[in-house]
Length: 334
Image (cartoon, rainbow, N blue to C red; front, top):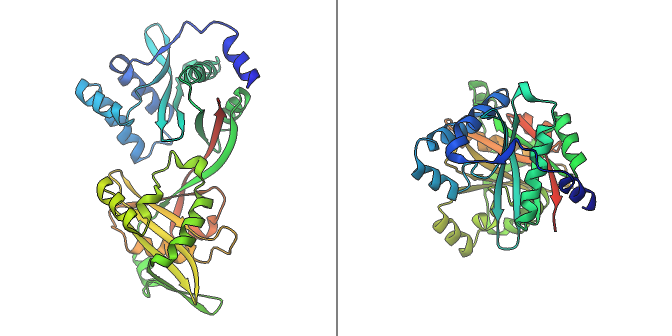
Protein backbone atom coordinates (compact mmCIF):
# COMPACT_ATOMS: atom_id res chain seq x y z
CA UNK A 1 0.00 0.00 0.00
CA UNK A 2 2.89 2.36 0.69
CA UNK A 3 4.09 2.09 -2.90
CA UNK A 4 0.59 2.82 -4.18
CA UNK A 5 0.22 5.88 -1.97
CA UNK A 6 3.58 7.19 -3.17
CA UNK A 7 2.51 6.78 -6.79
CA UNK A 8 -0.63 8.81 -6.16
CA UNK A 9 0.88 11.61 -4.13
CA UNK A 10 4.14 12.35 -5.91
CA UNK A 11 3.37 14.89 -8.61
CA UNK A 12 0.55 17.30 -9.31
CA UNK A 13 -2.75 16.19 -10.72
CA UNK A 14 -2.68 16.56 -14.54
CA UNK A 15 -4.39 19.78 -15.62
CA UNK A 16 -6.44 17.91 -18.21
CA UNK A 17 -8.26 15.86 -15.55
CA UNK A 18 -11.39 17.17 -13.92
CA UNK A 19 -14.43 15.78 -12.13
CA UNK A 20 -17.17 14.37 -14.35
CA UNK A 21 -20.10 16.80 -14.75
CA UNK A 22 -23.23 14.87 -15.81
CA UNK A 23 -25.10 17.77 -17.39
CA UNK A 24 -22.05 18.87 -19.33
CA UNK A 25 -20.34 15.58 -20.17
CA UNK A 26 -22.86 12.76 -20.35
CA UNK A 27 -23.44 12.90 -24.12
CA UNK A 28 -19.72 13.12 -24.87
CA UNK A 29 -19.01 10.20 -22.53
CA UNK A 30 -21.75 8.11 -24.15
CA UNK A 31 -20.20 8.78 -27.57
CA UNK A 32 -16.73 7.92 -26.27
CA UNK A 33 -17.84 4.66 -24.64
CA UNK A 34 -19.70 3.65 -27.81
CA UNK A 35 -16.62 4.37 -29.94
CA UNK A 36 -14.19 2.51 -27.69
CA UNK A 37 -16.36 -0.55 -27.00
CA UNK A 38 -18.26 -0.84 -30.29
CA UNK A 39 -17.04 -4.41 -30.84
CA UNK A 40 -18.14 -5.69 -27.43
CA UNK A 41 -21.37 -3.83 -26.65
CA UNK A 42 -24.35 -6.14 -26.17
CA UNK A 43 -28.05 -5.31 -25.76
CA UNK A 44 -27.50 -4.27 -22.16
CA UNK A 45 -24.64 -1.99 -23.22
CA UNK A 46 -26.63 -0.29 -25.96
CA UNK A 47 -29.55 0.14 -23.56
CA UNK A 48 -27.17 1.74 -21.05
CA UNK A 49 -26.04 4.26 -23.67
CA UNK A 50 -29.63 5.09 -24.59
CA UNK A 51 -30.34 5.67 -20.91
CA UNK A 52 -27.38 8.03 -20.65
CA UNK A 53 -28.54 10.07 -23.64
CA UNK A 54 -32.09 10.21 -22.34
CA UNK A 55 -30.81 11.47 -19.00
CA UNK A 56 -28.97 14.31 -20.70
CA UNK A 57 -32.32 15.64 -21.94
CA UNK A 58 -33.95 15.90 -18.51
CA UNK A 59 -32.51 16.79 -15.11
CA UNK A 60 -35.36 15.02 -13.26
CA UNK A 61 -34.56 11.72 -14.90
CA UNK A 62 -30.86 12.33 -14.26
CA UNK A 63 -31.49 12.64 -10.51
CA UNK A 64 -33.73 9.56 -10.48
CA UNK A 65 -31.17 7.40 -12.27
CA UNK A 66 -28.31 8.68 -10.15
CA UNK A 67 -30.10 7.73 -6.94
CA UNK A 68 -30.22 4.14 -8.21
CA UNK A 69 -26.60 3.92 -9.43
CA UNK A 70 -27.98 3.19 -12.91
CA UNK A 71 -26.00 5.97 -14.57
CA UNK A 72 -22.34 7.09 -14.35
CA UNK A 73 -22.73 10.19 -12.18
CA UNK A 74 -19.34 9.94 -10.44
CA UNK A 75 -15.89 9.85 -11.95
CA UNK A 76 -13.26 11.82 -13.83
CA UNK A 77 -12.67 12.82 -17.43
CA UNK A 78 -9.66 13.88 -19.50
CA UNK A 79 -10.35 17.00 -21.55
CA UNK A 80 -8.40 18.34 -24.52
CA UNK A 81 -9.43 21.74 -25.94
CA UNK A 82 -12.93 21.43 -24.54
CA UNK A 83 -13.38 17.86 -25.81
CA UNK A 84 -13.72 14.82 -23.54
CA UNK A 85 -11.25 12.22 -24.85
CA UNK A 86 -10.90 10.08 -21.72
CA UNK A 87 -13.36 8.85 -19.12
CA UNK A 88 -13.48 6.80 -15.92
CA UNK A 89 -16.68 6.11 -13.99
CA UNK A 90 -16.80 5.46 -10.23
CA UNK A 91 -19.81 3.48 -9.01
CA UNK A 92 -20.37 3.28 -5.23
CA UNK A 93 -21.64 0.12 -3.53
CA UNK A 94 -22.54 0.39 0.14
CA UNK A 95 -23.91 -2.39 2.30
CA UNK A 96 -24.42 -2.99 5.99
CA UNK A 97 -20.81 -4.04 6.54
CA UNK A 98 -18.86 -3.00 3.46
CA UNK A 99 -18.27 0.01 1.25
CA UNK A 100 -16.70 -0.43 -2.18
CA UNK A 101 -16.24 1.50 -5.41
CA UNK A 102 -16.25 -0.05 -8.86
CA UNK A 103 -14.14 1.51 -11.63
CA UNK A 104 -15.94 1.21 -14.95
CA UNK A 105 -16.13 2.74 -18.45
CA UNK A 106 -12.41 3.41 -18.67
CA UNK A 107 -12.26 4.74 -22.22
CA UNK A 108 -9.68 6.75 -24.16
CA UNK A 109 -10.24 8.04 -27.68
CA UNK A 110 -8.08 6.09 -30.17
CA UNK A 111 -6.31 9.29 -31.27
CA UNK A 112 -5.10 9.96 -27.72
CA UNK A 113 -3.93 6.54 -26.61
CA UNK A 114 -0.42 5.59 -25.42
CA UNK A 115 -0.09 8.88 -23.56
CA UNK A 116 -0.74 7.52 -20.07
CA UNK A 117 -4.29 8.91 -19.90
CA UNK A 118 -5.87 5.71 -18.59
CA UNK A 119 -3.15 5.39 -15.93
CA UNK A 120 -3.63 9.01 -14.82
CA UNK A 121 -7.42 8.69 -14.68
CA UNK A 122 -7.15 5.51 -12.61
CA UNK A 123 -4.63 7.01 -10.19
CA UNK A 124 -6.81 10.06 -9.59
CA UNK A 125 -9.87 7.85 -9.12
CA UNK A 126 -8.07 5.74 -6.49
CA UNK A 127 -7.06 8.93 -4.72
CA UNK A 128 -10.71 10.05 -4.64
CA UNK A 129 -11.84 6.70 -3.23
CA UNK A 130 -9.15 6.87 -0.55
CA UNK A 131 -10.46 10.27 0.56
CA UNK A 132 -13.97 8.82 0.81
CA UNK A 133 -12.72 6.18 3.28
CA UNK A 134 -13.93 3.23 1.21
CA UNK A 135 -12.60 -0.24 2.03
CA UNK A 136 -11.63 -1.19 -1.50
CA UNK A 137 -11.85 -0.31 -5.15
CA UNK A 138 -12.66 -2.95 -7.76
CA UNK A 139 -12.57 -3.20 -11.53
CA UNK A 140 -12.79 -5.85 -14.20
CA UNK A 141 -11.17 -6.33 -17.59
CA UNK A 142 -11.85 -8.75 -20.40
CA UNK A 143 -9.60 -11.77 -20.15
CA UNK A 144 -8.11 -11.09 -23.59
CA UNK A 145 -7.23 -7.45 -22.76
CA UNK A 146 -3.70 -8.12 -21.54
CA UNK A 147 -2.58 -4.49 -21.81
CA UNK A 148 -5.31 -3.27 -19.45
CA UNK A 149 -4.64 -6.11 -17.02
CA UNK A 150 -0.93 -5.26 -16.93
CA UNK A 151 -1.73 -1.58 -16.34
CA UNK A 152 -3.93 -2.27 -13.33
CA UNK A 153 -1.50 -4.78 -11.85
CA UNK A 154 1.26 -2.17 -12.09
CA UNK A 155 -0.93 0.21 -10.06
CA UNK A 156 -1.39 -2.37 -7.31
CA UNK A 157 -4.60 -4.21 -8.19
CA UNK A 158 -4.71 -7.90 -7.30
CA UNK A 159 -6.53 -10.49 -9.39
CA UNK A 160 -9.36 -12.05 -7.38
CA UNK A 161 -11.46 -14.10 -9.80
CA UNK A 162 -12.24 -15.04 -13.39
CA UNK A 163 -15.97 -15.08 -14.18
CA UNK A 164 -17.57 -16.19 -17.44
CA UNK A 165 -20.99 -15.04 -18.59
CA UNK A 166 -22.88 -17.56 -20.72
CA UNK A 167 -25.94 -16.77 -22.86
CA UNK A 168 -28.52 -19.30 -23.98
CA UNK A 169 -28.92 -20.04 -27.67
CA UNK A 170 -32.44 -19.95 -29.19
CA UNK A 171 -34.20 -23.31 -29.22
CA UNK A 172 -34.33 -24.98 -32.63
CA UNK A 173 -36.61 -27.73 -33.93
CA UNK A 174 -33.66 -30.11 -33.62
CA UNK A 175 -33.36 -29.23 -29.93
CA UNK A 176 -37.02 -29.97 -29.33
CA UNK A 177 -36.81 -33.34 -31.10
CA UNK A 178 -33.56 -34.32 -29.39
CA UNK A 179 -34.94 -33.51 -25.95
CA UNK A 180 -38.49 -34.69 -26.44
CA UNK A 181 -38.39 -36.57 -23.14
CA UNK A 182 -37.84 -33.39 -21.17
CA UNK A 183 -36.35 -33.68 -17.74
CA UNK A 184 -34.78 -37.15 -18.06
CA UNK A 185 -31.18 -38.06 -18.89
CA UNK A 186 -29.21 -41.24 -18.27
CA UNK A 187 -25.76 -41.19 -16.65
CA UNK A 188 -23.95 -44.31 -15.42
CA UNK A 189 -27.13 -46.35 -16.00
CA UNK A 190 -29.11 -44.11 -13.64
CA UNK A 191 -31.72 -41.65 -14.84
CA UNK A 192 -31.43 -38.01 -13.81
CA UNK A 193 -34.85 -36.53 -13.12
CA UNK A 194 -35.55 -32.80 -13.06
CA UNK A 195 -38.14 -31.81 -10.47
CA UNK A 196 -39.18 -28.78 -8.46
CA UNK A 197 -36.87 -27.89 -5.61
CA UNK A 198 -37.80 -29.33 -2.22
CA UNK A 199 -37.11 -27.61 1.12
CA UNK A 200 -34.61 -30.35 1.99
CA UNK A 201 -32.52 -29.39 -1.07
CA UNK A 202 -31.77 -25.97 0.43
CA UNK A 203 -28.85 -26.91 2.68
CA UNK A 204 -26.86 -28.36 -0.25
CA UNK A 205 -27.88 -25.57 -2.60
CA UNK A 206 -26.78 -22.89 -0.14
CA UNK A 207 -23.45 -24.61 0.50
CA UNK A 208 -22.71 -24.95 -3.22
CA UNK A 209 -23.79 -21.38 -4.00
CA UNK A 210 -21.42 -20.00 -1.37
CA UNK A 211 -18.55 -21.81 -3.08
CA UNK A 212 -19.46 -20.87 -6.66
CA UNK A 213 -20.58 -17.30 -5.86
CA UNK A 214 -18.21 -16.35 -3.01
CA UNK A 215 -18.97 -13.54 -0.60
CA UNK A 216 -16.10 -11.33 -1.76
CA UNK A 217 -17.81 -11.07 -5.17
CA UNK A 218 -21.45 -11.12 -4.08
CA UNK A 219 -21.69 -7.33 -3.67
CA UNK A 220 -21.89 -6.77 -7.45
CA UNK A 221 -24.05 -9.78 -8.33
CA UNK A 222 -27.83 -9.83 -8.55
CA UNK A 223 -27.89 -13.04 -6.51
CA UNK A 224 -29.40 -12.44 -3.08
CA UNK A 225 -29.51 -15.49 -0.82
CA UNK A 226 -32.65 -14.32 1.07
CA UNK A 227 -34.48 -14.12 -2.26
CA UNK A 228 -34.08 -17.86 -2.89
CA UNK A 229 -34.56 -19.08 0.69
CA UNK A 230 -37.40 -21.64 0.76
CA UNK A 231 -38.85 -20.52 4.11
CA UNK A 232 -41.11 -17.73 5.28
CA UNK A 233 -38.17 -15.33 5.38
CA UNK A 234 -37.59 -15.86 1.66
CA UNK A 235 -41.30 -15.47 0.88
CA UNK A 236 -41.49 -12.03 2.54
CA UNK A 237 -38.18 -10.93 1.00
CA UNK A 238 -39.47 -11.76 -2.49
CA UNK A 239 -42.81 -10.13 -1.77
CA UNK A 240 -41.40 -6.83 -0.55
CA UNK A 241 -38.57 -6.67 -3.11
CA UNK A 242 -40.64 -7.83 -6.10
CA UNK A 243 -38.33 -10.75 -6.89
CA UNK A 244 -39.55 -13.49 -9.24
CA UNK A 245 -37.71 -16.84 -9.03
CA UNK A 246 -38.19 -20.50 -10.00
CA UNK A 247 -36.12 -23.50 -8.89
CA UNK A 248 -35.39 -26.92 -10.39
CA UNK A 249 -33.43 -29.79 -8.86
CA UNK A 250 -31.58 -32.65 -10.57
CA UNK A 251 -32.00 -35.99 -8.82
CA UNK A 252 -30.14 -39.24 -9.63
CA UNK A 253 -31.35 -42.11 -7.49
CA UNK A 254 -31.19 -40.84 -3.92
CA UNK A 255 -28.52 -38.25 -4.72
CA UNK A 256 -29.12 -34.55 -5.33
CA UNK A 257 -26.91 -33.56 -8.29
CA UNK A 258 -27.68 -29.85 -8.41
CA UNK A 259 -30.19 -27.02 -8.13
CA UNK A 260 -30.81 -24.28 -10.69
CA UNK A 261 -32.54 -20.99 -9.91
CA UNK A 262 -34.14 -18.81 -12.58
CA UNK A 263 -34.52 -15.13 -11.70
CA UNK A 264 -36.51 -12.70 -13.82
CA UNK A 265 -35.25 -9.22 -14.57
CA UNK A 266 -36.30 -5.96 -16.20
CA UNK A 267 -33.25 -6.04 -18.44
CA UNK A 268 -32.65 -7.95 -21.65
CA UNK A 269 -31.72 -11.27 -20.02
CA UNK A 270 -33.03 -13.38 -17.15
CA UNK A 271 -30.45 -14.76 -14.73
CA UNK A 272 -29.59 -18.35 -13.87
CA UNK A 273 -27.82 -19.35 -10.66
CA UNK A 274 -26.34 -22.84 -10.88
CA UNK A 275 -25.52 -24.77 -7.71
CA UNK A 276 -23.67 -28.07 -8.09
CA UNK A 277 -21.02 -29.73 -5.96
CA UNK A 278 -17.75 -27.99 -7.03
CA UNK A 279 -15.78 -31.09 -6.07
CA UNK A 280 -18.11 -33.50 -7.88
CA UNK A 281 -18.48 -34.60 -11.50
CA UNK A 282 -20.98 -31.82 -12.38
CA UNK A 283 -23.48 -34.43 -13.55
CA UNK A 284 -26.46 -32.15 -13.05
CA UNK A 285 -25.17 -29.25 -15.16
CA UNK A 286 -26.40 -30.33 -18.60
CA UNK A 287 -29.92 -31.54 -17.69
CA UNK A 288 -30.60 -28.51 -15.48
CA UNK A 289 -29.46 -25.96 -18.04
CA UNK A 290 -31.29 -27.76 -20.86
CA UNK A 291 -34.45 -27.78 -18.74
CA UNK A 292 -34.14 -24.02 -18.18
CA UNK A 293 -33.92 -23.40 -21.93
CA UNK A 294 -37.02 -25.51 -22.60
CA UNK A 295 -39.08 -24.03 -19.77
CA UNK A 296 -38.32 -20.31 -20.10
CA UNK A 297 -39.83 -17.75 -22.41
CA UNK A 298 -38.44 -18.15 -25.97
CA UNK A 299 -38.40 -14.36 -26.19
CA UNK A 300 -36.03 -14.02 -23.25
CA UNK A 301 -32.33 -14.84 -23.29
CA UNK A 302 -30.88 -16.60 -20.26
CA UNK A 303 -27.63 -15.47 -18.67
CA UNK A 304 -25.43 -17.62 -16.44
CA UNK A 305 -22.54 -16.20 -14.41
CA UNK A 306 -20.06 -18.96 -13.48
CA UNK A 307 -16.40 -19.35 -12.48
CA UNK A 308 -14.18 -19.00 -15.54
CA UNK A 309 -13.04 -22.30 -17.04
CA UNK A 310 -15.36 -24.40 -14.87
CA UNK A 311 -17.86 -26.83 -16.50
CA UNK A 312 -17.33 -25.08 -19.84
CA UNK A 313 -17.89 -28.18 -21.98
CA UNK A 314 -21.06 -29.12 -20.10
CA UNK A 315 -22.49 -25.62 -20.34
CA UNK A 316 -21.83 -25.51 -24.08
CA UNK A 317 -23.40 -28.95 -24.50
CA UNK A 318 -26.54 -27.64 -22.81
CA UNK A 319 -26.95 -24.98 -25.52
CA UNK A 320 -25.15 -21.94 -24.13
CA UNK A 321 -22.41 -19.84 -25.68
CA UNK A 322 -19.71 -17.81 -23.98
CA UNK A 323 -20.50 -14.11 -23.94
CA UNK A 324 -17.41 -12.85 -22.11
CA UNK A 325 -14.87 -13.76 -19.45
CA UNK A 326 -13.92 -10.99 -17.04
CA UNK A 327 -10.95 -10.80 -14.70
CA UNK A 328 -12.03 -9.16 -11.45
CA UNK A 329 -9.33 -7.20 -9.63
CA UNK A 330 -9.28 -5.50 -6.24
CA UNK A 331 -7.20 -2.91 -4.41
CA UNK A 332 -7.70 -2.86 -0.63
CA UNK A 333 -7.61 0.60 0.93
CA UNK A 334 -8.15 -0.25 4.62
